Amino acid sequence: MENNEKVRCLIIGSGPAGYTAAIYASRANLSPVLYEGIQPGGQLTTTTEVENFPGYPKGTTGVELMEDMKNQALRFGADIRFGIATSVEFNQEGCHKVVIDEKKTIEADAVIIATGATAKYLGLADEIKYAGMGVSACATCDGFFYRKKVVAVVGGGDTACEEAIYLSQLASKVYLIVRRDELRASKIMQARVHNEKNIEILFETQTVGLYGENGVEGATLVHRKGKEDEEIISLPIDGFFLAIGHKPNTDIFASYLELDETGYILTSGKSSATNVAGVFAAGDVADPHYRQAITAAASGCKAAIDAERYLVSEGK
Image 1: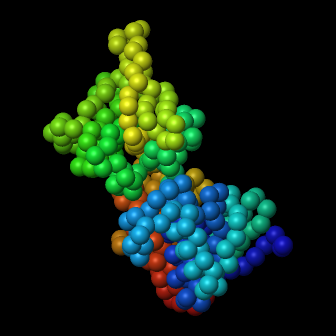
Image 2 (image 1 turned 90 degrees about the vertical axis):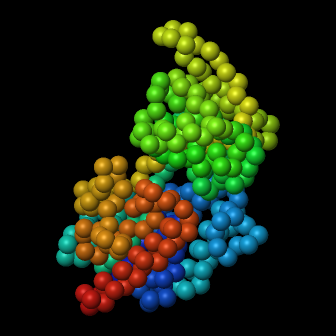
Image 3 (image 1 turned 180 degrees about the vertical axis):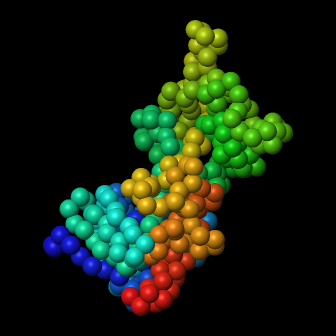
């Protein structure tokens, strides 16, 4: 394979945003090339059951949903490849270069970034062990499976409080595990948490492990009692939700694109356009609020349409 290649439309990243962008770009005759990234199919492939994506009345799995999207893009002629974007060089003149796996340089007239955001974890081996078996980083995605059950949410900010409140409408009991002696969330979010009778806050408490035979059945916690005294707690739960934030995968774009204070790509108005002409963003990489498969797919559609209109206007 040659070390340099010229394409009209390059899509970086897969998942609902990337694959949908590939479907629309292919149908617009943009001959898109898509590099799937380090996790083909994106974060959704770590989700076992998906019941809230339209068109699947009986539900599906994250892996199957992503395979369906990928196959649909392939059907329309998208060139889907395995590879990781390791560096970029963007400019306002529309000559955009992306290096794949530190070896191959792709020059593209239009680039759609769909690299997603990665949930932050505590770093426990048990989080990996029970992934999809009681451990989740998305209450909106998976809360439905814990109706009338007992769950725990880790975190003390607005996101953690929002997740705890959402789950309190489904679960019989919600524990909010907070490392500090107070919540970092806004006052209004704190008030809402305190108003929910089935939410119990465990302050100055850290999770050190999870346990269970075929899934999460409980968490092992350490509660600080003063500066030196500690209490080990075994907390029976059915689900363990992480809400300590997400990190958008934007490091290689930081020198060229405008980002918000937490690293998400800023887009212009209601479009997917970034501050660099010919570069567009779709999915969780530009969405700190919703982080849903359906909204990511919709933004992938927008990015492809925006890219097609840009190329036409530039005569490319």
